[in-house]
Image (cartoon, rainbow, N blue to C red):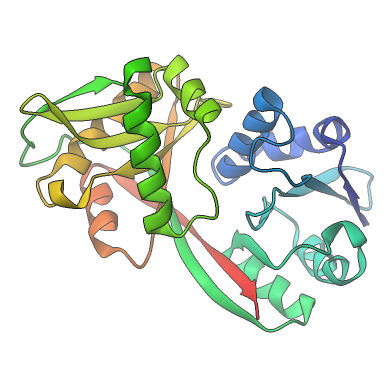
Length: 279
């Protein structure tokens, strides 16, 4: 039983892709990051070199994977318990992991990894993964209508996604290349009212029949009018039309309003994830 770490994306995909793809719901973030790295190259998330890891069990089968795209946290997929414990030692010993100061993992795995790592940590964020059951229309319905974003909306998408990133404390904002990619498959939906844009919801290209909604953003001046519910409903329909049989999204557990909105639309909880940061 061992961890292997590498900066070689092709080697990681060969070794780990089947294990990651076997859990398309829980591994949704891993799968979307893989897609971006394959489409836009190893620096899709920044200038630093990504690091990839995979766990090989006693029978020689790869049982799970992690990846690190600085400045984002080390991202853990579905892993056996023994792999999580062993990763704690690797964080202290493997030079490729020397830059890791934070990680994103399922709640139980985050607690186990923090203990195995032996470094003091604090909770930076708690997230809940939802999957769509039966989609329900917003009630009451917000005023306005949804439309797909096009090339002419790129300046608006750039501004709104930057505002969303600042508001959420994300380390980087989406690149123009990533926004153009989303526009190319109809992955950005805008809600309009009185002829002007008031809210945005995007969705990731379906991978293994699963698509994740995000970001969802309404400028502060337009909030509390139901626009986020309307545009999320429209983006969910668009993701299903694009081939997704699983529509997913994450919420910040510190935001009870968004959690309530998504539940009313038909989303049901799957599991919680935690981002821990080393002191």
